[in-house]
Structures are given as C-alpha cells and as structure tokens.
Length: 529
Image 1 (tube, rainbow, N blue to C red):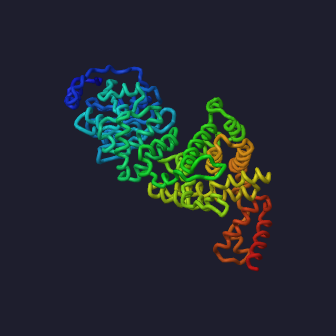
Image 2: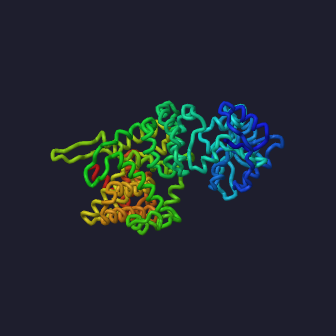
Image 3: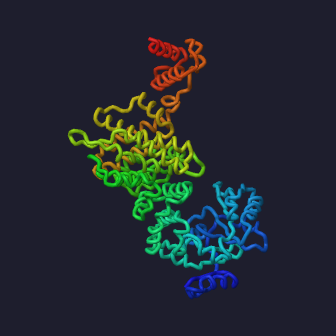
C-alpha cells in the first residue's frame, strides 16, 4: 500500500501510473508538526494564487526525520525559472537560471540566522507529480509537500522507509538513468545512518561500470560531498566493495596489498583508509564544543590537552574556503587519500631487505595534481593539494628528531616549513597526526604521540600567534633599495637576497634596515667570490 495526500486529481494520476502494480492508494493527512525554515512562509506568500507548488526532496525528508532543514527544492508543472525570478525579487535575493534546459532557477537567500539558503525551482520531470517522484533517486527523497495546503504526497512509501532506516531506489533503472546516484546512496546512508536495501545495492553494483562515462565535474561534486560528510572512510570502503571506486579514483586500488615495514600495521590501502578515519576523529576533537566524553581515549585526551587552545583558530582556518563550491576540509581529505598514492611505484627493497618508498611524497604530489585536474579542481586547490602531499613527511621528520635527539624544530626549520607549505601548513600538521595514529594504531607509544603533538603545537603556535615574528616578518628593505645599494639589475638575485633577509628576520638575526643591508652585502660578496 502507498499513501498519497492531496486532492483527487493527483490521486487518479498516480493510480494510472501505478496501475500495473495494482496498488491501493489512500489519502494521507498533512502534518502540522513538521518544522521548516521561516523562509518557506515567505515563499508561500509570494506564490501566485492559482499556482500549485510542491516542496520536494531532502527538505521534506529531513523535516520528517526532525533534522534541521537547510536548502529548499520546489517543483511545479512549468515555469521554474520564471517563478524563481519572481521569488528572488520578492525576497530581495540573488537569482540565476541554474539549468535552462530543465527549466530550473536558483535563488540564493539569507536566512534569519544569517546563513545562506539555496532555493531551487524546477519544472516537473514528467507529465505530473507522480511521474516526477518516480524518476527521483530514493524513496525517502520522493516525498512531496504542497507548499500551500501542507498536504503530503508519498506514492513510493518513502515515509515507511524513513521509519525503517532504509535507502531504496525509486525504480529499477534509477542507477542506469544516473550512475552518480551510486555515490549519493553511499553518502546519504552514512549521513542518515541508514542501510541500503539489498536490491538497491545489487543495482548499484551492476551500474558502477557506468560511472566512467559521467562528467568529471559531477564526479568531483559527489566525491567532495562524501569527503565533506560523516564517515568518509566507511563511504570509500563501500564504494570499493561496490566496484565504484576505481571509475572515480583509479589510482587507489593499486594500494591494496602493498605491504609496509614496521612500525606500520597496515598495507598502504588499509593505512590510507585509517588515515582518513583518524583525520575525521582529530578534526572532531579539535572542533569547538567537542564533548570530551565522546570517543575518549588516552591519545584524544592528550590531543585535546596540547592543541585544544587552537580550536577557534582551526575552525576559522577551515572556514576560509579556497573555492566557494568546495570546502578546505574536503580538500584535506582528498590529500589524505593521495598522500601515499605513489608508494606502489616507488617501492624498493635494499640489500638487507629493508622496504623503502623513496620520493613517494614528490611523485604522490604529481599524481594528486593530475587527478585533481581531471576532476576540474581550480588551480588554487591543486596548488594547495600539491603542497600538502609533497610536504606530508616533514612533521614526521621533526617528530623523529625530537624523539631521538631531543631537538625541537628550530626557528629556521619553522620558517622553512611554512615557506614550503604556506597556509597548508595547518592541514599538514593535522594530516601528520592522523598519519601517525594510522601507522601504529593501538601500538602507538605514548612518547611518540607526545612528541608529534609537541612538534605540531610548536608549529601551530608560530602560525597562529607569532606569524609576524617567525613566519612572515614585515619587510625592512625592498628590492629597489637592494638594486640601488649594490648596483644590481632586476632579476632572480634580488629575490634570493630578499629571501635571505626574511629568513634572518625570522631567526631574530636581522631587525633593522641597516642589518638587512649588511647581510645582503655579505651574501652578495659570497656569491661574487
């Protein structure tokens, strides 16, 4: 039995669509208890009197689950772009035609809490609402609500699946129609803590070969939604089991079975998934408002104790997105996936049988950048990604030296770390801690973890608290002054002298213009000699 709320006309339409299954169709009363953002009322008041508009998709699903509702998707018989333009004008919001071919318009509005809300208005995909819902991805997203009357339309039993915590495809052809729904199913199952129905899983596995034909941009967007969401490591393992990982990230399956020497406890593939999982936990511990009793253990306790002072700074750092469509958090998880991607190609065994991966950081950066270009990431994102993968061994080097030689990173080392990494140094610190946890897992010695935390604390302290002193000191001399003082032409030599002065400033050896010129004279004389 399927339930449908509303007026008789849609019911008869639905009856025709489902007649072959001989389903019983009944009325479902509207629910006055559903909570939606106040902006929905503003939209309702701006609708033409004779127009029927439905709220569809995730907004209805989340309201039924008593989850916060963020963005709003609307469906109407026709005129999606025209209605979006009208609503945007009435709200004083931004408008643009999202998909003219499908008559879909987008409105970007500001909610009462100051956050951004996206409102999409689309023409029905089919002759009526029933056909539109049947063509959607999953039954829990195929529930509609009449914006004016509040009546609920649920022809595919989505409410029942919500109750059963089950993700079920709307039709047998759902994944053949759009293979990207495979990634979406995995992500939504993780977000909602649902299981995927067996028949739906089988259809996903069958259709996974079609992912290779999807556009790189759409693959990128679905992948980043997974990386930005909960339990990305679980999602990646699920994609692998479904045969959907290789079409999206073909470099990763080669990591399986590549053994690593002690202290590693995993092969490269399992280690990579463990790094992603540990990274998620570390970001959770260092998030504002973290509950110390959730997932508490000795390692997380020490992490919170040593680095908890930087929770707000870390939050602000990740809020500064490089690209408005993707988060810095997602890019960091992408880097985590690729940080050891070149190990299969760089594996060497020396004369005593020791396994090495010389240059895997450099080759890995190149591989990560190549995949990022294929997925149409921006140049700024690719540069940031390369910086993280190329330098991901630096923190481990300083941790090992602190353990063996009791030597903390010097001021010169700190300066050079951030000269190489820039703002990506913050992500490097967090990735390094996840890498350390995943290398040892439960065999991690407390002194090794403490050393890693001490190195990261020192680096973050300099970045967040002493940047003008030890990382980016204000210039005391410029290139024109150097050219005039030493009769030098413009060129690389001027840049080299300026860099030597900046490093000396960071080390506390130069504080004045006079000292800077003296250092430049010395360096220039050495070069000439």
